[in-house]
Amino acid sequence: MSRVDKAFQHVNRDVFVLKEDGSAVMQSTASQTIKESLELLNVREGNQVLEVGTGSGFSTSLLSYLVGSDGFVVSLDIEPEMTNRARELFKQKNIVNARFETKDGRKGDAEGAPYDCIVAWASAEYLPQNWINQL
Image (cartoon, rainbow, N blue to C red):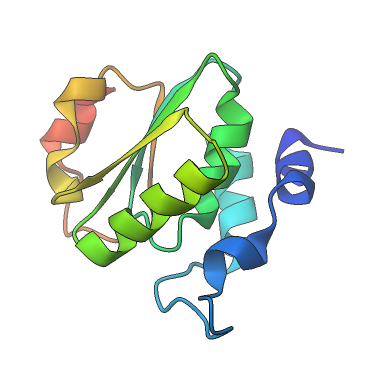
């Protein structure tokens, strides 16, 4: 079983992709897409990861599991509702190896750099130079 498969078994997807009323969080990437992307990303324990597009926070939780207690995830989203919701869920679950920021992901996050890898769930017209500089 791959480390990504183990992460999917460990994280309860519904906690992140469903609101309290049972309706779906609108900004959620399909699980299969997340799985395939994380397999390609090859996240290792202890990695520092920049995630662009917090969305529901589900993928952030998977990344948090993959980097382990010695790693860290910085997750960015332009929607304060998304970052605030994910931040609260992580607080409730006592997950402390991730930080959420509301900002334009194309700028990256120099504070947490350098990163071992960057994953973007949102598209950009071009590969931002900030990402290259922060790797």
